[in-house]
Amino acid sequence: MLEAKKSAWFEKIFAIYNRNLFKRRFQALRVEGIENLNKFPSIIYCNHSSWWDGLVAFEISRKAKLDTFMMMEEKQLRNLFLFRKLGAFSVIRESPREAVKSIKYAANLLKEKQDRVIWIFPQGRILPNDIRPIEFYNGISRIAEKVENSYFLPIAIRYEFFGDWKPEIIVKIGKAETMKSKNSKELTEKLAIKLTDILDELKQDIVNNKLESYENLL
Image 1 (cartoon, rainbow, N blue to C red):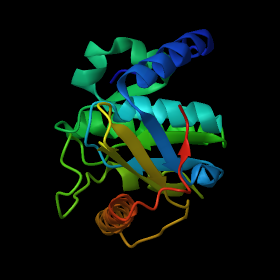
Image 2: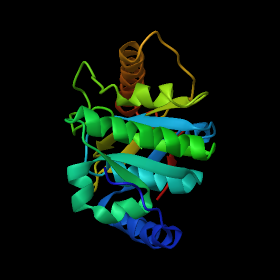
Image 3: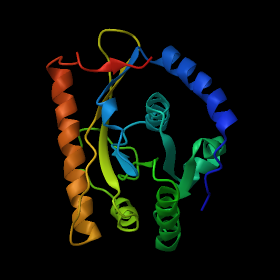
């Protein structure tokens, strides 16, 4: 696996680049619930509908001042190797042996410092927001099994056009909570239901134009 090689100076430089990139490509990055990013250690899990998702995670992490790491497919990370300097590490989900290495690495990151978070896209690939049922790989719950008192925090992301030539990113952050189950498969299914619920809530907020509580981070 490819480990993260975090660099504080690179992160500062990339933050300027990323902010300018978002302003060029998007009309807004609206986020609700950023105050919920206050429980540690946390496993943040999101839907994965766009290549932009990882950069959205970076922007939110900067705003919330999080010590962030992120799990990425190894093929993608080899192509975007500089992301390792931002805290990205790899996983090969098709190989159980390699996946176990990534799970252990993620768990150790959370145990080393109690104020860390790990972002995971447990669907494992880019899929439409409205596909149902949402299905996760079990890695997310196996990480939690190795980290006592860890929190789960669901985040829903959508990309929408609102009459402008540039789309907006709309993000709804759920509340962090601890969850226990008899086995990893059962826990994974519960987490998938949680994310489904917050995705549906986000869609209704957009359909009903109830976005007053969403803060624009751009």
